[in-house]
Amino acid sequence: MLLRVKDIVEAAGTDFAVPSQRNYLSRDSGVDRERSYAAEAEVQAWRAKGVLPFPEFPSEQREQLRDTLDFPPEGSPNGRPDSDQGNNGQEN
Image (cartoon, rainbow, N blue to C red):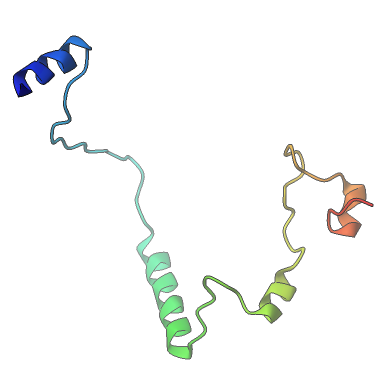
């Protein structure tokens, strides 16, 4: 029975999954170690203070960040014309 199933699968032009491995080679310089260590140290400091901002930022910080980014960016399909910037993207 199993050999018949194998024949049917092969006749359909496919095969069963087999273990494989794929290696990707990169020509970039990789991670900047100094910046990586600095980021790790900053997160450790947040942990020590008990102020990890994820997944929710404190409401005060959200208010400070409100409208500081051009999002969606100008030129994108959902971008707002400059005239809409003053009303937080809400149409009247």
